[in-house]
Length: 171
Ligand SMILES: Nc1ncnc2c1ncn2[C@@H]1O[C@H](COP(=O)(O)OP(=O)(O)OP(=O)(O)O)[C@@H](O)[C@H]1O
Ligand SMILES: [Mg+2]
Image (cartoon, rainbow, N blue to C red):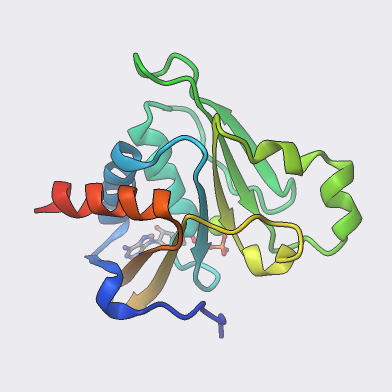
C-alpha cells in the first residue's frame, strides 16, 4: 500500500473525480492556477490516476500531443513556449518508480530542471527523497468506488497562493 504524506484534511482542497474525464477536466483547472517554479508531488498507488491528471494539466496548457508515462525514461520534458500567449514555461513530468541510483540524478542533470521557468510534476517522489527539493503542492489520489478521491495540499507560500486561486475558481 502506498505510504501517503500526512495532510491536514481541514486545510486541503478536495474533489471527487468520478471517471477519467473528470480527472482530465480537473487537470485543466489546475493548469489555470499553477505558477512558474512550482514543484508538485503526485502521490497514489499504481493506477491511481497520476499520469492521467498530468495529461489533463498539459491539455490545459494547450499541449495536444501524446503524453506518455515516463516510467522507463524517468522524465518526459515538454516545452510550453508559445502554446498560450503568455506561456514561456517548461514542464517536466517525472515518474521515479524505477529510480534507484542517486548518482544518476546529478549525471542526468535533473537538478537543473528545477528552476523559476519550469513546472515539475513528480510521481513516486519518495524514491528520490534525498535528491528532490521540497514540493509546493502535494496531490494525493485514492480509489473511491468507481472513481478517485483527490486531496491537494499546499506546502509552501507560493503553493498556498495557488491553492487559494483554485478554491476561488472552484466556487
Ligand atoms: N477519476 C477516475 N476514475 C476512474 N478511473 C480513472 C480516474 N482517473 C484515471 N482513471 C484511470 O486509471 C487508470 C490508471 O491511470 P494512470 O496511468 O494515470 O495512473 P498512475 O497513477 O499514473 O499509475 P502509475 O503509478 O502506474 O504510473 C487509467 O486507466 C485511467 O483511465
Ligand atoms: Mg503514472
